[in-house]
Length: 300
Ligand code: FDA
Image (cartoon, rainbow, N blue to C red; front, side):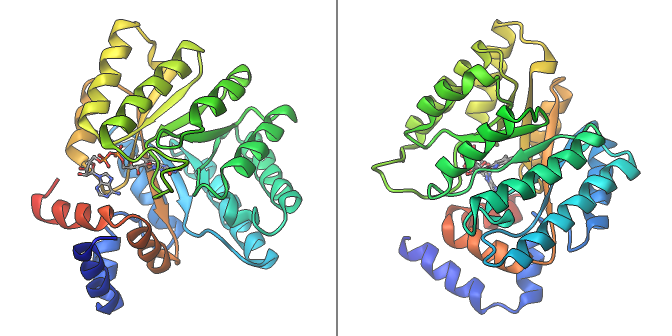
């Protein structure tokens, strides 16, 4: 972490929670499920879909995992009861991936069974590289066990991603493609901005050429416009892809994508663990701190 980022992070750590809360709440719907439902309803009224995330990750006990599962079950019931256009995003370390894989599998399976009763979809987020193999393994197992209502995430910055796609492609995975949020060692990850953009587009084309559904998760103008170009040139139907963005980020670009006639989904996190979550995100990727400041002052 460079000196400026370290300095900003130390200042943020010293700030009282209510002040940090003001920063964090730009990117988080609130502490309660009702807050997430309210935000998704407002997005739906603008023709934007949602994906709800219950904040929390890396739990260390089975009890915490079971509590996280109950929180996610409530989300699924609530999406159905409130007739909102949304699905659920989950993190496997929240469900015990690092405690016991079998336990984690049974937790996710239970969730997918409930989701499937409502005809709902669950996306497994991708966390740092210590979880990539286990996450993909669990996803592949769910698919071989017949679950169709589950999707995965591929990070363009990871050197392994092209091979992962080649292996997954026969399953026709529903993939959210993103750059990758975690700073990883150069031996396993690309670092250069242009390099990651280039790989992102290569993976995007690979997935679409193989007729996989793709969630194009980016706020990068260059990638958005390159995706537009591919969509237009290949006459891609709207049902084959969607754009995805984070809540609170680049709302003007978001509205433009919708105005241009594309499907768009916004990632809406909520929950009581917002403080720990925000601090971890700031620490993992100090670039976010700069985004927060820039966004606060630019009004975008
Ligand atoms: P880039 O970082 O170049 O950002 C372009 C511009 O967007 C910036 O200049 C800034 O203005 C704004 N911006 C981007 N991110 C911002 C932020 N967090 N706060 C404020 N402004 C921001 N990663 C991962 O490893 N696993 C995952 O499961 C997911 N899931 C996911 C879901 C969705 C819906 C999105 C949009 C993204 C993710 N990501 C993710 C994060 C992703 O990997 C990546 O880190 C961020 O999207 C930033 O990369 P961009 O492509 O947006 O470009």
